[in-house]
Image (cartoon, rainbow, N blue to C red):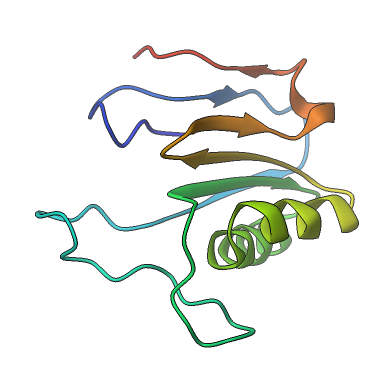
Length: 113
């Protein structure tokens, strides 16, 4: 999971033995406020809070779909969806990086290259 504030560095690394991982992220914007936030599919209004969501799932299609949904739903509802589906994820926001509880032992969380 790349660190948007430090190009070329990472916020978290995940090592998988099986399954798939997919990352959904806001696009890099050349200027503050130049890119619209993702839209909350329930309300049609801009969703806020997450810059990226990386989801670990049994297959790539599930990982990609849930990562996009978590990004659009935002931190709390996105994390609730991941938990309800019994998946694992890493979330990046302005506040930092959060990891699903059962993924903490296998994720490396630190800046590096």
